[in-house]
Length: 123
Image 1 (cartoon, rainbow, N blue to C red):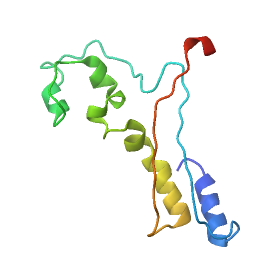
Image 2 (image 1 turned 90 degrees about the vertical axis):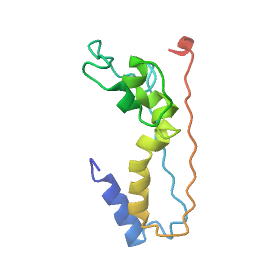
Image 3 (image 1 turned 30 degrees about the vertical axis):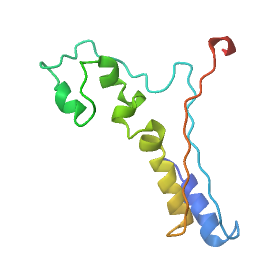
Image 4 (image 1 turned 135 degrees about the vertical axis):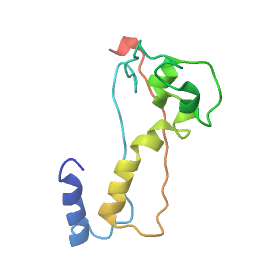
């Protein structure tokens, strides 16, 4: 946790300042005109020379070398636990919510995810 906001929230919950907590909600949003996970592609990447494409694919479906998939892997379901935001980014806020509220059992987590993008005319 990069700041004390979670610790402060936990204090309010533990002190009873909010009453009995019966539900907690988090969200994770990214706003970018370029889209998400548009990492740079290294033109010097060479399968068989300086990287092992087959090993990198692991149990994912076999396919020809694709630098887009290698460098921007979070954009593809094959490599990111079926839902990129859920796999990679929801864990931190979700675990923080759990720590703040001290949920131990009886919690019923729900998740929804999606990619939403405006058309260029909105910018």
